[in-house]
Length: 239
Length: 66
Image (cartoon, rainbow over all chains, first blue to last red; front, top):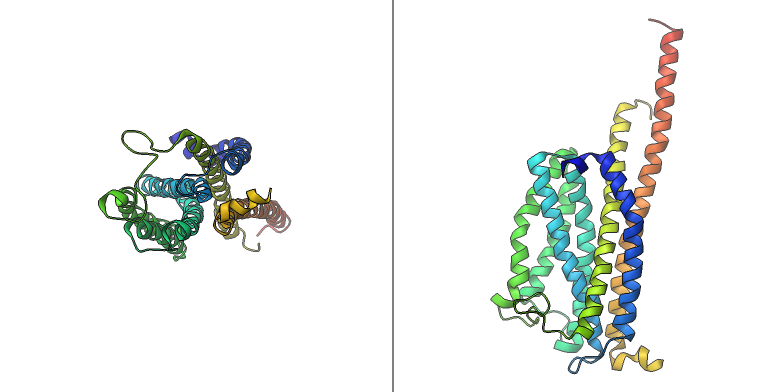
């Protein structure tokens, strides 16, 4: 792990991975689109709206995984004070917020025809909205200090406190009566979804995770360049 | 074909879902890509300027020892 804590080595690894992740993203999303839109059945109850699942559920998974990334990077930053962990945390929050937004909007577009409402303040929807605001809060807090070190620390503490929201999201559908359906893919006793729908779902999820990784690594590169610019400007009196 | 686009009457829900999902993902990657490229180009520019500055001040010291 510590071998990749060196920024130069990390960036070399990131740049080696990026083209492959890009190809994986385009390939999996393309295949996922074909499977999801053309080569999978309509649901016997939900009809064609079941196809919204293929863009909604992976977004929610990445939104949660993105927050885990943010929390792990924050913990690493607080423990080892490594600047690269700070950059990873700062890179994760806007990308995670983007995927959470996808989950919320596509959820509303699925809720309206199937539940008869765009939004309901039930436990699952509300806890995911809280996740969205945690991401936004992290972005605002890390940038609220002139000293990036202090901003990074404050953001890391917020990110770690917010971890309590992750099990709430996951188990909200079991702990409370929600309009949102309970877990049907990642559940004890196996999935309750037909393979004809599970395959496009997993293919699309693979594509989503590749997009997440691409955006995350590119943003770490951008933030690293920003950090270098700051140092260069401080060392150059007339630049 | 038109049956496909109609999505069993749910076109107004299905197609915007796909548009939002792919639009946001494309936006995220484009923003990340542009910000990385722009930042790295600026670092290169400053580094080149920085080396020049350092050489210039070294020359100045050599020509004008205090």
